[in-house]
Image 1 (cartoon, rainbow, N blue to C red):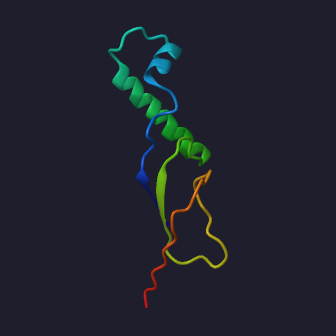
Image 2 (cartoon, helix red, strand yellow):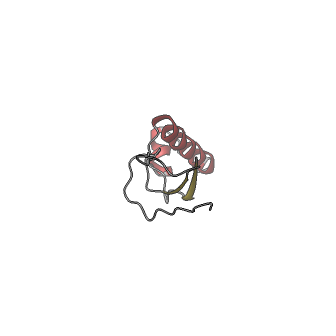
Image 3 (tube, one colour):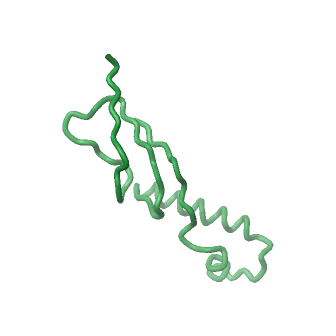
Length: 89
C-alpha cells in the first residue's frame, strides 16, 4: 500500500502574521523560518493524529483489491474522484 500526495494544502492553518503575534516577534526577518516551523508543526500533527487538517488530494495505491472494504488511511474523507482496478491477467 502506498499513499502519495497529489495536491498539497493551498495554505497553512495559521498565517505568518498570526504566528508572529503568538510568539511575540515584531520583525519580519524570520518569516520564512517561522513559516517552515508552522508547516512542520502541521505535518507532525497530521501524522500524529492520522488526519488531514487542510484540504489536500492524495492517491492511494493498493497491492491487491480488498476482499471486503477499502480502508482510507487519512481522515476525514470529503470525496472520491475515481477507483481504478488493473487486472494483471
